[in-house]
Amino acid sequence: MAYAATAQAQEFRLLMIEQVGCYVCAAFNRDVAPAYEASAEGQVAPLVHVDLRGPLPEGVTLASRPFVTPTFVLIGPDGHELERLTGFPGEDFFWPYVNEMFDHARAALAG
Image (cartoon, rainbow, N blue to C red; front, side, top):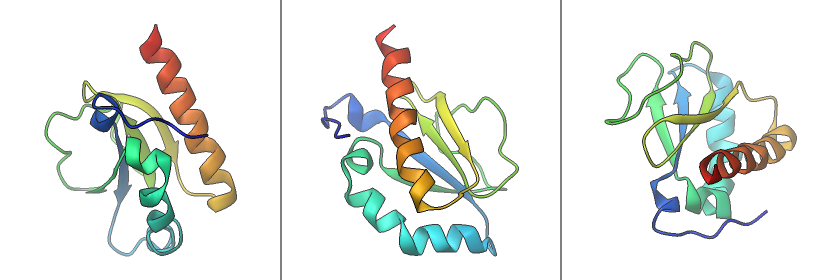
């Protein structure tokens, strides 16, 4: 599913919470991140890498602190968490779930 990249949409971000030594994170970064960054979804919500034990990007508010890596958090224009995927069960699951995250976020923001 393609999403138009508007000025407002550029305010979305997909945080990838990761940590050094996470082999699943390394596999995602190697196998999926380049395709995500080039995808329509990646243009709407750029991937932002965040260390599990580090600070969150300025202005970001999460519903709860992640404790599993990787954790993917869709952040809305206001800096608040909209959707979350904990873990990475594989590329075949990732893409449909990311599309679902965007669908839920769009519906929530539409009111």
